[in-house]
Length: 208
Image 1: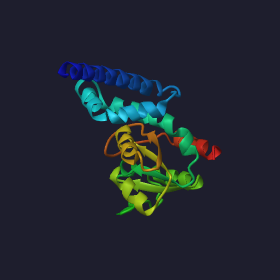
Image 2: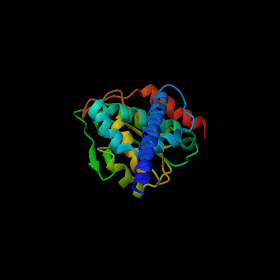
Image 3: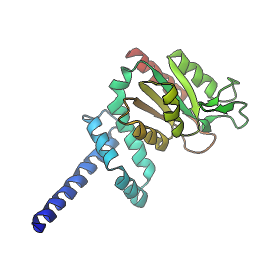
Image 4: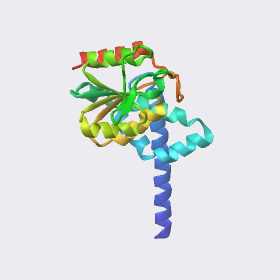
């Protein structure tokens, strides 16, 4: 009996490693092209996220795991996000000017459209394509805002870590997420490709 249980556990372990490795490969491939069964592979990576995170922290760079997972989830969510009607855009406060005159509320930083940073243009583009625009100080703000401002689609601009964290926290809530990674990480003076942002907004606008 114990011999059978031992063999069964070994088979499950080998199978788990194989499926995880296959899903990691699919996530890396998704950086350059669409992946078939991307939703399934994304769910596998979410299920094994903690041991995979430990492995990448120990032997590689955990930022790679977040980047691959965000890319894979974008591939998986693309068609469903295009069908959403009520959309919010969340951007991180770390892109704001160091002398930003805006004030904070429970809905995040309230942009004054002073023109000192990229938020003025991002806000204009977001509203042009029908998104509610929010500047937040962390992924925890997303769920709080969604309580008062329900939506079926959320577009997040942030570092891969925060995007993946937000995607995982909203999994199973019925909210479809899509992420645009910033060009650099950090707590201030971060940047995003503004042309790519507008191209993404336009792409989903055409698919409506």
